[in-house]
Length: 143
Image (cartoon, rainbow, N blue to C red; front, side, top):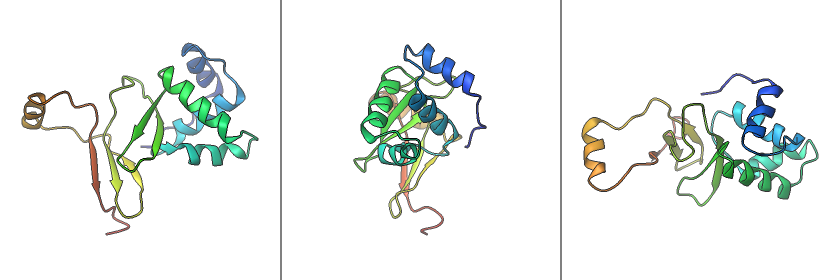
C-alpha cells in the first residue's frame, strides 16, 4: 500500500532517532522507501539515487546503516536479491508483513491484510516462530 509523502522534518527526525546523521542521501533513501509500494533492491535504490549524485557504494552503506538502526527491513524472498523497505509504525524490525513474489516477472507485492489462521498459527508454533510469510505464484499480469 503506498503511503502518503511525509515531510522532510519527520524523515530527518526518524533518522536522527535511529542514531544516524540525517545526510541528504539518507533523507532521499528513506523518503523513497516510504513512498514505495513494495520493497526495493539495492540496484533499484542506487539507480534512483544516482539522479541525485549518490553512488552505489553510498546507497548500499546507507541501506545497511538504516537497517541496523531499525529504520529499514532487509528481506530476501528466495531469489537471492536483498530488498529493503521501511519498518512501519507498530512493526518490529524482525516482524515482516507478508509478500507475494511473482515467479514469472519477479514483481514483489506487499500483502498487508494476509494473516495466518488460528489453526495455522497453532501448527506453526509446534515447529517454531513464524517471522515472515511469503507467497509465490503468478501475478495477474503474468497469468
